[in-house]
Image (cartoon, rainbow, N blue to C red; front, side, top):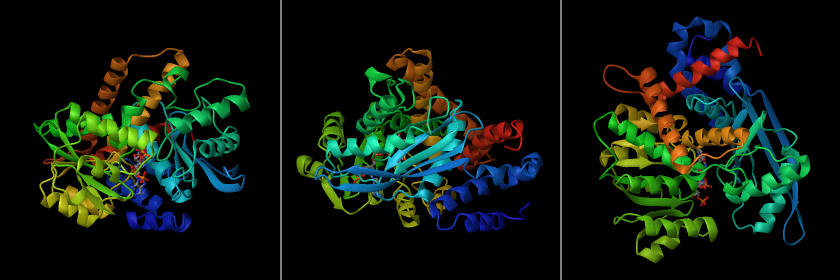
Length: 445
Ligand code: NDP
């Protein structure tokens, strides 16, 4: 038994050296759980905490492929199969040059709790590669995906491990990966989610993470007698999550005033309405251009190399990547009157930024609750694949809204004190209980 969070973290850091994002993710969870565990010694006796931070399996592999000039290139592939106590491993694939084992372990660890919160039977996993799709032709991306799946196919399956998309992995990549799996295994089965609609995909899956994040924000505001309607919203990123968060904010009567990419932020005080959003979707998903082009087209301000957090807003939705809001950004958001922050991305707020939000009673929805809508609809895609049927757009959207409401309620049940709702604590405890109980039921495995 460890005597303090710090002592426990000393053990985690010594055993997982250099994996700073993983340490950060574990620290947050252990902080939330510490007092709860003291009141529930069965979890301590069964060493659930020591077990839950250790992935069940990590696969790391060579991915050789040929570029358009005929040269061989080599990347590194990973699949972290973190926890299967409540269902097959489930979690996205990330293709980005920053990908390493520590980042995928942080993402896989978060995924375990997130998937538990969705109420669906899914374990947690994450994978990907340090491959950079930016600037590559479709042919090169296909060549890479085929090589990646040639190895990954040995480790996944509809009842074993079902990957999906994440940064750098959208509909195009899922298509190439699925095609290669089918070719190798001679089997048409639901081994990936985020598939195309005419080959096993679910309606609302592309929209689900962004929509879900906004539904969660609306629930947090509703608990305070407020709503998104009439609010100005700063969003970071301009990929899948950011695009559909923008769409849903518009639907609910809010105004999105920023989007960004790794080159900088566009600030459009008039709001990014549906026509402008259509332009962004074409720019990013088809032309694969830079967000600065939006500023040229619409005469908006381009803040080169900057994130959106200096722009005054009522609601902040970080939807790009990890650690994109630091303490100074958080203080600026608070100073400018921001009322709510919900994480569309995974762990976008540094721990010191989270402290600022909680210390100032900002409604703060952590990623494992606020962005769980994507994996929730992936779970619904798996159900539809098993049943060999497709639900309508309205049916899936309604289920998504119901799931986001129940996640919000679970956070309220486990994170409320006299004055406020600590959504971080609520999400961590609620997510933990289901997985931990299943681990204990299944013995020392
Ligand atoms: P996309 O690849 O579609 O978009 C990512 C966006 O974030 C791009 O605008 C990209 O800009 C920007 N970005 C990525 N890395 C950086 C960086 N290091 N610095 C600045 N900007 C960056 O990914 P998604 O929208 O799918 O994912 C965004 C976040 O949401 C991630 O944290 C992901 O883990 C999380 N998430 C995604 C889910 C999904 O269903 N897709 C589900 C749950 C969480 P650029 O093009 O210049 O790199």
